[in-house]
Amino acid sequence: MNLSKVFSASVDGIEAGLIEVETDINVGLHSFNIVGLADKALSEARERVNSALKNSGVKPPNKENRKIVVNLAPADLKKTGSHYDLAIAIGYLLATKQIKDFETTNKIFVGELALDGLLRSVSGILNIARMARDRNISEVFVPKENAIEAAIVDGVKIIPIGNLTDLIDHLEDRRIIDAQPKTKLEPSLSSGYQLIDIADIKGQENAKRALMIAAAGGHNLIMQGSPGSGKTMLAQALISILPPPNLEEIIEITQIYSAADLLKGNSFINRRPFRAPHQTASSVAVIGGGQDPRPGEISLAHRGVLFLDELPEFRRDLLEALRQPLENGKVLISRAKNNLVFPAKFILISAMNPCPCGYYGDEEKECRCSAFEVFRYQKKISGPLLDRIDLQITVPRVKIEHLQNKERDNKSADEMRNKIIRARAIQEERFKNTGIKIFTNSEMSSKLCDELIKLDDEADKFLKDIFEKNYLSARGYYRVLKTARTIADLEESEIVNVGHLAEAFQYRIKDKE
Image (tube, rainbow, N blue to C red; front, side, top):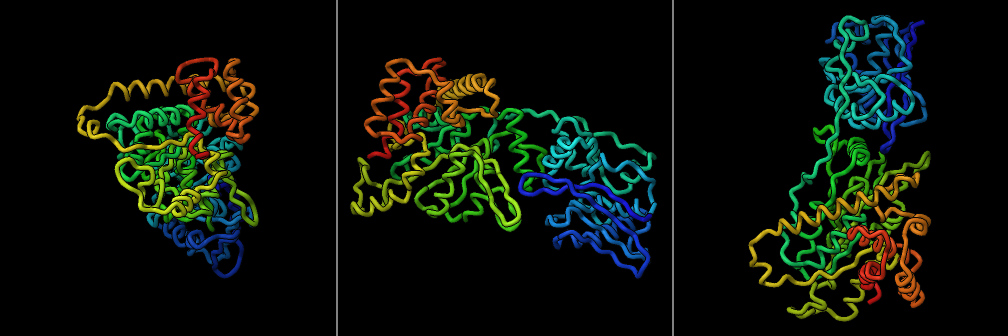
């Protein structure tokens, strides 16, 4: 029987799935068809596989005067990309008996073939390796360029392939290819971005305090102030005081960037991302989705920072679409056939002017806007969106004595960074026995807040007072609790006192002005 079955994989969103590649050779006039909802790039695999096989010294399909059918199952799942080439070539060689039979059920073949038989790198390899481990598949054959990325995953043997000839020799036991060693991940303190170190920012002590709280607990922050007051610099400086990602976070970040084909020659991402989309960005670009669903900016900012400068200039529907990811830490992309979930646990840092001219409330320059224009401009940011932002601050002008001070405050910046790292370690210890995978206070559910946040009597009375006076919604109540818990963690205090609550509450007063 001239029939073979090998396995490859698809990547839909950021989730990988197993694909059966069946090859059937029948008597008849020569034809070579790929079926199973293949896109244009996959349909062109026929020519790539033909040339790669011919240039690797084996008989190619176009020399067979027979009917060749390659089926990619499940047939109702759309197949995109060129990474099925290798599986198609191996399936053809098995069906035509040009290589000896081997056990195919525990192997996955992934890679794009060049015309000379070399293997080119493809996207989504880490996702495929994790899927293989979850399905107890023992070996994954990948292009050499992808091997370090794939070897991040434990429990799977990664075989790096340089060209088709080497793979044939390996499968025929003529020259065995050694498995790729396990990749050791080292978190990086360096941001890797051309951004600002917080030691370079002059003055703005109140804003730096808010940034420290945001970094320590993963809280969202909005800054309002006149043009040139330093809002953008402050936002860019946040990444310099965030602690390095842990190993689990590195894998999560890399998985997203691999699926989006944004690793850019890197095998993994060992630093926290910083994403700053322009105001003209579409909802699909920011939230994710599209005809072939891809992660949007909010997913690319996962475990890092999403910076939205000039917040009111973004489209209203885009801003409202942020509400669900800010609440749940993920975004659901609904389609006719199936739904996709992209992770989106990011720190939202946003900046805005107080009015269209930018000088409403400025001590130095007079505002030219009418009261209605100021009202309409500020109302572009809806109440429900503001309610999801824990820290709301005003950034004043920098005084001239601060601007002319040329000394970097390295000591203060290092102290701030060390405090944040200690606060994150306290949170990690607190959540260790909850059975839930969370890393920061901002990710706590209301149930966890009730269980884990301890208030003293004075703090409890203060919280009841501000809630009864309608200063807080139910969501705001828990967000103040979480922010206060972060402030207490920065002071390494087990109990949340009234001072912690008062500071957390004053960061939310702005939306009541």
